[in-house]
Image (tube, rainbow, N blue to C red; front, side, top):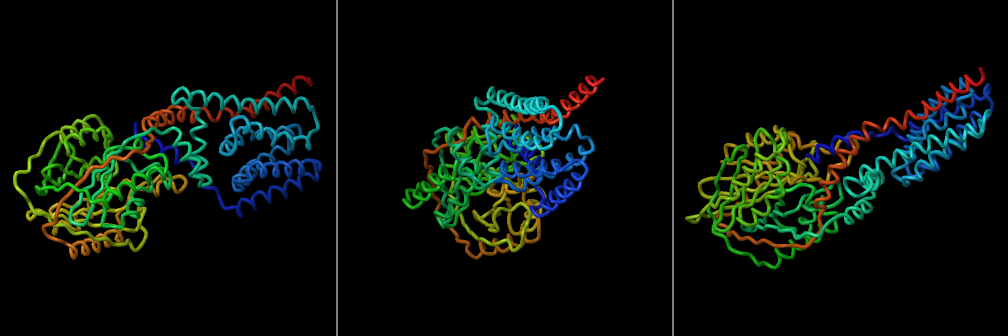
Length: 534
């Protein structure tokens, strides 16, 4: 079950509303037209629309654009029904279910349909010319139907996750609508679990490579998304933070929790309790559909994992136990968007690879160079303008790692980067840390993998030049593995994804039923009224 693909599917349903000015003009024109229409239908027609507009703004006062959009859509219907006098008092109830959906961000499961019903019922009294009891019955029926639908959706979610569906969705919607990340993080901390994470720190000269048992999500500034930047801010050294196996189950629930881990890394580096390593050089391996470029040492190995032609995105988190046992660590290069999901076949290949012991018989001298540069103009998919280049040489081979802050890359980006530097290096690897800090920051598009553009390739060129100028021969190699007590989302993410898949599919198939219910009920009432009069 691909959580990112599923989330991207639903996230694409969000739309960006027009500007407040444009919506205001739209609603203003409708109000003027309602006044003109009231010259024949009576002043109550325009008064009803005015009261409806005021109540909508009061109910949605935190989201004026939404209130304007809803009022504008209703205004179209209201002007049409003005030609059917019997329908006018009931027309305010036609949008109760839609208003209920919209209000769920700010209000509870009962208060949303209750406020929506009141918002429709009160203005109807100013246009009422017929049966008051019929008016009351219509609004109650529509409001109750909307409420029972929410109960139905909540129960389906509770069966899967143990928490009503809307209690899970609401914090995410609030965070996206109001940038109130603290409420979402408070919810995530409540459902998170205690966890002891492991972090590999590999020091090559004055460059530190960090591989934590964490995932850098949820999105934006929520959870452990800012973790790579937190580590860099605290350490202020030459550093690359890589992405290991694991997905959103390894997300910290809040940036406060991820900061704990970042501080522990900074403290460990400052304490300088390293274990010396004997380098064995650079090697390349192939295992089924995977390609590995490996830094060999006498006590550990670090392999940069790629899956050419198929894409690579979040290796199975269960690999960490075997990695810690064998000392063979995998970096998920996260450098090519998925074309085929990582399945059981791939997991077996990865387990086979990390379970094999690779003996280092001789000693190789490693040379290391580190450089940075800025991307001078915008490129699609980048989360930070900073790029890094790390050169590692063992006397026979030269490895170039090009590091960009992004959430994966398209295939063309990696190909162009390799083409640019293939004459100078034996291995050229593009790496992203699966950066979620720019994920979910614009409506309708969850994230964009970094795309090839001249600016990013030119910045790589400058970073490589800086790395070459800083290259040092025969550097000392050291490592340490630290453990930090923190919190992660854990297995609940699987329940959330399952709930999103099952309840989301159900909601997408049935959400229209409450929307058409008031129209069907209105038709039945008018049809019944016609036969009664006969």
